[in-house]
Image 1 (cartoon, rainbow, N blue to C red):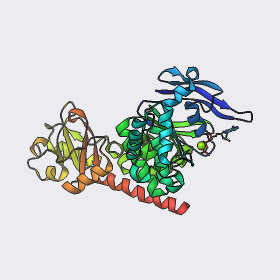
Image 2 (image 1 turned 135 degrees about the horizontal axis):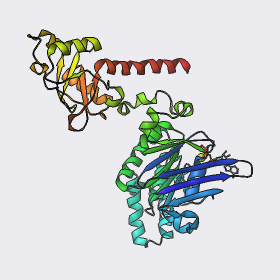
Image 3 (image 1 turned 135 degrees about the vertical axis):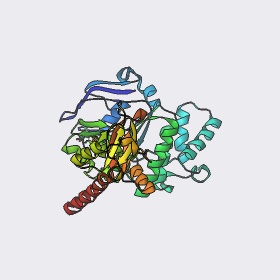
Length: 378
Ligand SMILES: Nc1ncnc2c1ncn2[C@@H]1O[C@H](COP(=O)(O)OP(=O)(O)OP(=O)(O)O)[C@@H](O)[C@H]1O
Ligand SMILES: [Mg+2]
């Protein structure tokens, strides 16, 4: 719903935005992140026309904002900045009230709404409403800033490092609250930060910028897994994926070519095949590659006569994984069911691969090695 088309910005001295095109969908939280001076604030401020682009067009709901009346446009766009922008000589009530007043909301309605907004951001109106901003903590003031941005019930909210001035604990609370609020209210939020953990935590998509260009624009998961170049991997932090094990999925660590056989195949042939491929588990499939059973080498070796078909010893696996199950799910399954292999299946039970405990162990030890590497470098 917000679309940048070939946007550039040049000041006399330099180009600060080169030529960026990207789109932010309705109801999405997009985080702009990148080194200081890369153009995040500039990009944000072009959305509510605080900065005019030198070239290109920005569309909101397919309307060119250059053609829109600025006041009307901003009414539909909340804006939160680091310094909160609260008026210091006004109480919290007055700070919110003034926005509602400008919107032409009736006085009785304004009082109700101010209270509701403060409740929404976790501030008890009866305690805080008549205080001045200096009588609130940094985190509380940020909450008021957020409440104010929501006051006009805008479709879009722009947030420029809104939580950077508060302590880490409060910051995490504010992040959680923002995610919950967003889930409820489905605003489109463009959020600027320096902090990759913050980005990963709140973003639907992350836009990584450098020197006025967009380097990568993708979901947190894809950015962590497939950084497009060295800049992104360094910026993201090589090991961050490990602090997000939920992002490592069965499809990332499975063997996509496990040894399979039809159930009619003789045990002797199956054993030979497994020996050649050095595996201890046979996956039995039908001609459409649907998984119908498993047969471990141990059982196949003990069975007589070996001319029997593998169907004679195969059994139904206790646990199956989908490609999207996380490493956490897989480890839990291994532990709960005391198993060593988990077949990964898609729709209709189609076999996609096999996760072995050794793959899990390798993945986890990789984490250990990488951490050590980092510790040595720091
Ligand atoms: N009025 C101006 N005249 C000239 N250059 C400017 C002006 N405003 C901003 N710039 C430059 O544009 C570049 C981008 O600035 P911007 O504020 O968008 O960066 P940012 O990514 O938000 O950085 P930070 O993380 O430090 O907030 C910077 O190099 C800045 O010096
Ligand atoms: Mg900035």
